[in-house]
Image (cartoon, rainbow, N blue to C red; front, side):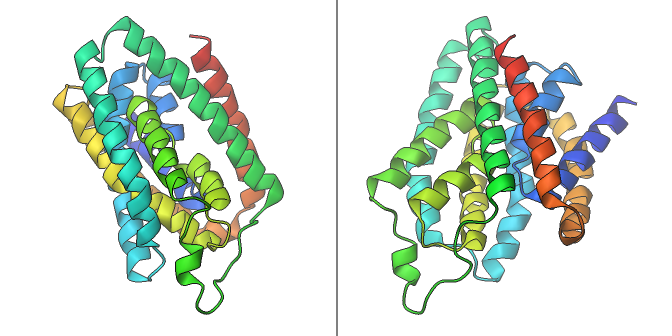
Amino acid sequence: MHDVAFILAGFLVGTVVGLTGVGGGSLMTPILIFVFGVKPYMAVGTDLLFAAFTKMGGTVKMARTGLVPWRVVLHLSAGSIPAALVTLWVLKTMGPADPAVQHLMTSTLGVALLLTAAATLYKALRGKAAPKTIAAGQEALAATARHWSLPLLFGALIGVLVSITSVGAGAIGVTVLMVLYPLLPLPRIVAADIAYAVPLTLVAGLGHASIGSVDWHMLTLLLLGSLPGIWLGSHFMTRVPERAIRSLLSLLLAYAGTKLIAI
């Protein structure tokens, strides 16, 4: 029965991701901790690889349609991957099961969920503020940040956050990218956010695996549920009230974040 529950959890998260684009980490990690009683370090490590595999398919699909702005992805990755490696080294040195590390993970995860909730609610209430198309000859300009250092700094921050909590891309990433790249159309911002999350979560997930923080059996079951869930969610994306779902999600994430901080 436990195996079926993991598959159903994967299906639920996959469906929500397909419907709204909200990152799976912000949903799956709290579910693993609160519903299944998984230790925070094991939930984070397993969820990182879960995110890498689920977002890989979306990246391939978007790359084929030419949506991914690779220059943006490269700049973000240049900050996030080195930061993730340093964070993993610190976790390995301290020991992921150390009580102090566990407390850091739950507290930081709580803050990350509150930020995700705020970003999700903002998007639900304000709608799509980014432009939908790029003017002729403006491709390079649209893929240039307000300052060259900002993508590196933001990438480094997300690299640390993702390695500790498995949360950081998704709603937070999209909201910040809209500020860093105001001329970039929303579909390309979403594509960049998903694409740079793949190498980041893969590196962070494999790093967690190397220190024993990944449950491979649980990961397999979650993926068995999530992949058809994502397909179903994306299929019905245009037929559901996205604003209502995002508003409800923001409340659930805020509740989970508050509960984690209080642990």
